[in-house]
Image (cartoon, helix red, strand yellow):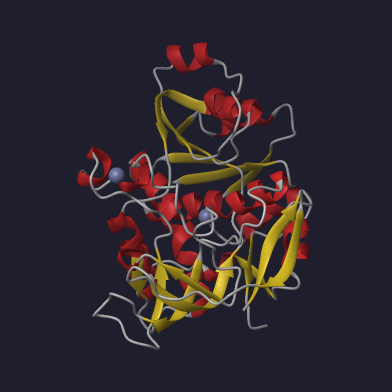
Length: 341
Ligand SMILES: [Zn+2]
Ligand SMILES: [Zn+2]
């Protein structure tokens, strides 16, 4: 089958690999749509792991149901791409997202589980979830990133009338903004260094205002607009200037949810976090319940995630899609890959 794999720094190659088969009860799926995610971009940037077939956001059709008696050939599915052990304290408390091994064998993030940027994939049967007919293939591929935002929003416990800032208007940030509005926030702002993306958040209707993160007056303006700071800040970038802009603009006693990821230590103004007595949460992935709830919310049209999808490209054009997503000046939020295109 055809796939695209990492073959160097910022480089993908399209190649042929063996079709996956159902061993250990795994479900084999023909991929319909695969999402390109920020964590894929990290791996692409680093050129590692070499040979990795990325893609952990997908929709597809069952080719072999493996050990799943409730699935049949032709069923439409997606999957939680995580690999929890099922035995540890985190798993037993229904928080597989912080199980110590949950990323060790994750779909499209580990070499032993080639992902959805391929014509087919196989994955552990217990993580596969059926998609209702009212969720189309594009929406199916959006379940996973939507669940990331939903989990962050749930941790933030947003109250009716809250003022919310989202730092970074990528798909996770826009999802957080969407869920903040849904929870009844009265003012949702985004800050972005890419003006086109920032303005797009307002155009898409998930944010009321865009602040240019490059503007030295941004924090001061935000403090004036909010009469003293945001109740909740979602930090979806992961670098010091972004994290600090959140610490500056969140109100005393407010909540910060750290969603952005940095692979190195970041220098933050901890004194301000201390004196404001901030509640700071890290947010990673989702619970099983949250993932399933996102399928339901998409199926019931409670949320519209298709508006974040900008383009659907072929495996041959996936390299170009990564370049577009990292240009720093493009408008693209989410690009999907269609392996049959
Ligand atoms: Zn992702
Ligand atoms: Zn575990």
